[in-house]
Length: 204
Image 1: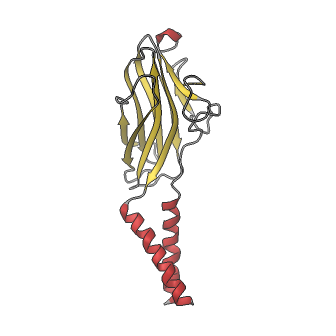
Image 2 (image 1 turned 90 degrees about the vertical axis):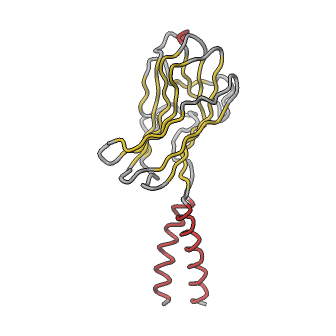
Image 3 (image 1 turned 180 degrees about the vertical axis):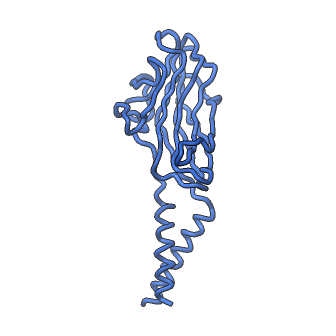
């Protein structure tokens, strides 16, 4: 009996470890370091998705920026980070970041996306927030959530836009991607705690 309880406890403790490891899955989430292949590995649009210290970023000293036509850069751009660790099918994930625009910024489209892929790099699902709830000259948090489909092995976090107008900037900072435990998983964690308590009683 004690051996069976021990096996159950060990299994459920492993589940508990997964549940409690809910830190940010993104690297360089606040852009405090130069962009690299280890984090925001792919960017597009000349003169776009660049680090600056303007507008008092909410986290650290830097944020990432898109610029209007006044900058002379492309009128489109973006960047992405692939997330390999911590992605599991059936788990819900929440992507959030803080955004700021000013001086007449406009764009035909602007969005954050949470995408899930299988081992063959096939897109399985994409969840999008078009950033329609932003307020001028104020840092505003926006988020999007989605569940990783069956077969998911990694995710991509994307911040992109196109059709930028002549004026202003759009900034982003403090990106976060976290797993949201499902009720059933949380219940298993509780069972794990109960099994440990029962095992302790049996041993003593």
